[in-house]
Image (cartoon, helix red, strand yellow):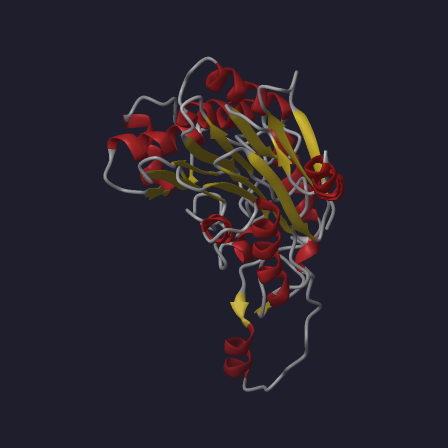
Length: 354
């Protein structure tokens, strides 16, 4: 009886600790498990069907991201969205196997809508990691994917036309002339030199947050743990709206948009890829968990490293460890991520405040 009384305060402490921390990190307690950025419910359901039927974690993220491409999630994934300055839609995608650490990715891929399946073909049928541009398209078509296909839609062309009518504002150029119009653009200092002037008139600089938003610049990043406990991640995006043609964001960059290691866990990211890829936040998250950090702290730490250097950046990550504990962190916006585990009847959405 004395021993039981001594244990009672400890039990009460653990109960209170769970109540305090329960909103920050959630233990699914078992796998399989599928986690995705944003409330892309049907994409997570597709990934869950694959992994719950006994398929691999790689199969699950490919099926989930492919479903998002077909559904054109938020207009930021798959064909028909995010036109570049020329009005064209291109695709970035990545898949990573946390068992073998193999990666396949495509970037600025034209004319082929199946980004995640093309990325898997790179991983499984080449000794490379990343293929880009029209050569990536030619590879994907030669390996049996449909194409060439016009990836634009009436909606994306209408969005582009309206942007052109607004003098191509906002855009991703800086230190150029014309500052407030459509191109062609020239370096401001070079023009001053040619004209023999020393003009230093400052143009109005748009904050990055005006260029990056939920429906203009987004990625599906998905992680899965299969019934064997193996982990994989996948991403797909059509990139930043009105990007300079040829731009590649963080979507196909290993360690930035996603990272997986069977021994530790996984991470997925979304947001301002031009900034985030400079910090490899998902690699940082997984390595922090390797050193003993819990998913919530690892996610917060990765985001805070970016925010210290770029206070106006917008982005988020989710983290899961190999035991299925998941959490998220964000900066500049409210972030939501979706989860499906055996104890759930359907996909559940978790909200993370900045």
